[in-house]
Length: 321
Image (cartoon, rainbow, N blue to C red; front, side, top):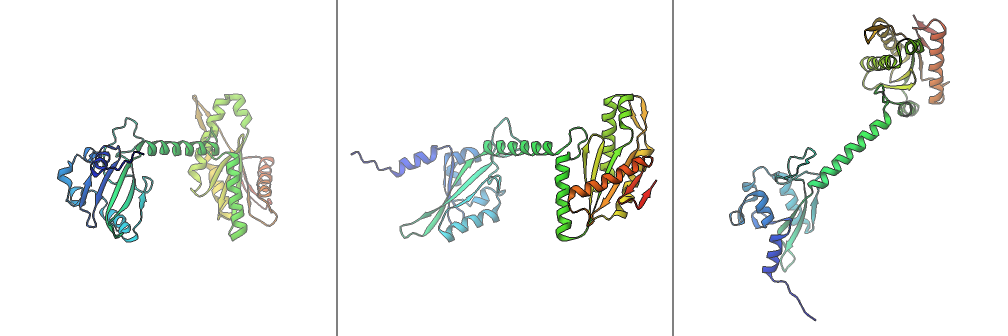
């Protein structure tokens, strides 16, 4: 059988021509090997690099971090790894790709391998550098696409608020938090008055404009921690965590007055808009989040039945007109 034993010259030939960066440093980070790939991408010739301090050659390197990686290989006598997700790159190498995905430099995966002598002592560290720019770009694009898809699945397309399913999920989370840890929350349900007349008189595009305007006012009025959503049609819901009924009523009344005072201008016409509002604070009778919604809805219908353009709280013992 033919026996093949690779020579040092052959191994050097292979290392110099593989499409992967390979370099070796000693304990003091002096360069012992610098393959052609590293020379091509760093624009530093091999003969000018050998024996030189790596951090003098490349002052931009994360010296403290990389020295720790090298020291760990010497100490543990085992491999070490780092990926582009942990640190995008070690060397600021250009990547020459037309589609960058916002990547300024070549993204790199590194493998650090101990080089041992005959006694098993680590005398140097060999580092392989793999260009993973394409992988990083496509993974980043995929994550962004998935994030947009997730956001779209949670958002009402017309108003930009939480859609009903996601809003109710967030309400349930807050409801469970109150049950588990205490505190309180207040739920606001609101409905546009005579909205059918807006659609019938001015058209559905005008109705859409009204819904968007009311949604914008919701975002302007409530805190970032409050959870606003389109419950369905012209009805909206807002969850106010850690807010009692009195505080929620003040905010709801401010919103009602703001909407009532500012007609919506659409296609040269001012469209008057008002809302009816119902509120319910977390209470023992609402033993599920659905019952809390039912209580706020009951208060909302009381606002409508008593003349509209009102805020009413459950169980109708406090009303503001």
